[in-house]
Amino acid sequence: MHVPPATAAMSTSATALMRALWLGKLPYEAAHQLQLRLVEERAAGRVPDTLLLLTHPPTITAGRSCTPQELESGRAAAKATGCGFAECERGGRLTFHGPGQLVAYPIFHLDCCGRDLHRWLWLLEEAVISTAARFGVGAWRAEERGVWTARGKIASVGVAVHRWVSYHGIALNVKTVTLPQGVFFCGLPPSCYSSLAAHGVSAELQDLGRVLAGEIAALCGLVWSGGLG
Image 1: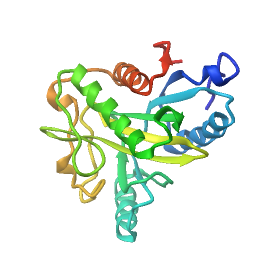
Image 2: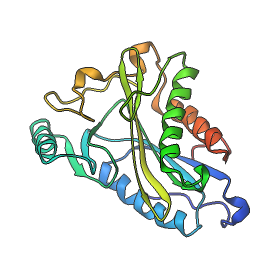
Image 3: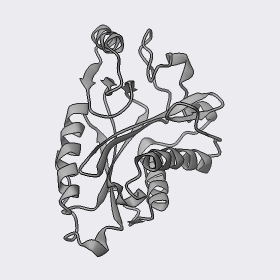
Image 4: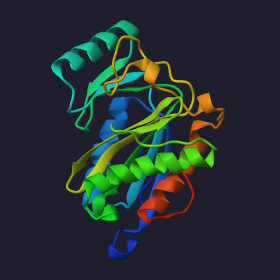
């Protein structure tokens, strides 16, 4: 996957910049490899904080907190439904990606939040909450990680960190997302999940991504041009 080069070499004064890229529909493994490459480039100071915005074909992913039983359940569901399946290094348990869902992968140096991982996760959730509010939807945190509305959970959040650079990120259900039945995602049955569309929001994924990018930039104190490329 080709990513446009940064417009200027990074320096101490350039670390307040953010770029956002709309990648459209991208297979999970291709996005994962792209993230790993950008993590190294960000850690070396060759690129600014970079937000990848995309959607995946149907894929079940397994984070570090999955139990053996959950891994078995995820693999079985993927085989039964024809979904992809991937184990990954992010925190959390099973997560589903598919059509109608906006995925946001911030490849950000955690200097933007004082190298405080808990604050970073809070910021990602806050960006989703603020984005929902812009569309007239009330949203909040619950005891477990993620963002909820009165109709159910609309977003999952999970990250990994390497050399103080975060990757993985947010899965936000914009349109109705059809979850495989019989699997608990983030420990919850499919019936617990909802979407912005269930609240009457009809935005396209790219347009929603632009709003989310603006909220992330504002919360992190980063300068963003407003472009997605």
